Amino acid sequence: MGRERYWDGQTWTDQSRPWTGKAAAMTEHVAPPATRRPARKALTRARGPANVPARETPPAKALSLRPQPATPPAKGSHRPGMWPTTVTLVTVVAVLAGEAAIIVPLAYAAHLAWPSWGALVPFAAWCGLALFTFLPAAQSWSARTHGCREPTASERSRLERPWRALLHRAGLRDRQYRLMVTDSDDLNACTPARRIVTVTTHAASLPTPHLEAVLAHELGHKRGLQSLPAFVTTHLTLPSRTLRWTLRTLWSPVVPMWKRAVAWHRPIGFLMVFLLAAVATTVTLLAALPAVIAYAATTLTRLSKAPADSEADRLAVHLGLGPELLTAVETHIENTAPSAALPLPLVQRAQHLRRTLPPT
Image 1 (tube, rainbow, N blue to C red):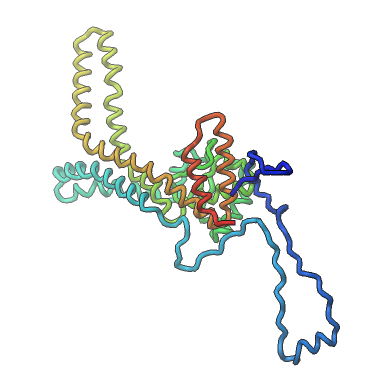
Image 2 (cartoon, rainbow, N blue to C red; image 1 turned 30 degrees about the vertical axis):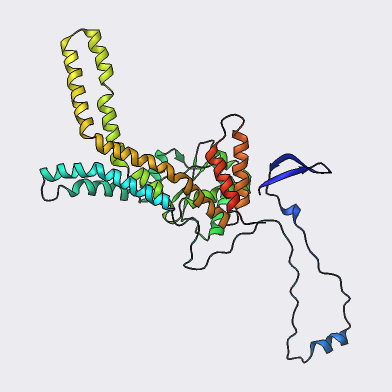
């Protein structure tokens, strides 16, 4: 299951290494047994009349240990990586409820100022900014704000072959998704842009089979409703992020102004600190309950990360790249474990991948 164990000539040892994916040398061809060719007259008598076609014996197939891509599902069947899990849907609903707790008081205040359409303005602005991110230019801007960039010439030449091979496996067009790079030593990186697949610089240096498997995982985050969690936690959490920025902006100058007031020994300095602290306290008390609800809902999004990664891995397994992805994950674990703590989420992901792979 993605490992190679050493044989010392008598027994299997405890030493092992990741499977390199080179299964061509392990291919075993089964040749049909040698038979004597019958005479021409005997063959004619066995064939019978000329208008009756003879039954042809199918040639023997080669027994290969290389993983073959899975057969595409029938039309209308469930395709892995298309639908989110129940945990993901629950966290998405919780996030929306938390953001609504911030929008509703604003809508009520706008209704008091403008009774006719005031209540719809906050909701329209919230949904309008979220829908704006579906535009291609907005998706590119969103990806760049998350640290993504266009691949360099050397990276493009290295990524082009496995990327095109993956799109061919998945039956997708070249222009349907866009590939970008982020500077990171991690194995995976997911961006909120729905049509942009991101690969890290570390993953771009992997061998071609492993790189294609990692790209399949990243593509699994963008298929169907699997892109919903990243979209919700990034674009629909704008009210809570704006509220946190407002509270942080109000409280950040209080301590520096207090230090200046102490240094000045002037009553005006203490008065300014008191007024600013009073305004910040009032806003904090008014926004305390919505802020706590939104923060708790946003914290729940961490629970959906593992199910989302599992569903993305299922697409790689479905495309026949499960062993290569498992090898890439285990290699990354072995390279990071000596220098840092063991990455438990990555270990759990490798264990789930082993259970997902079909038995050999």
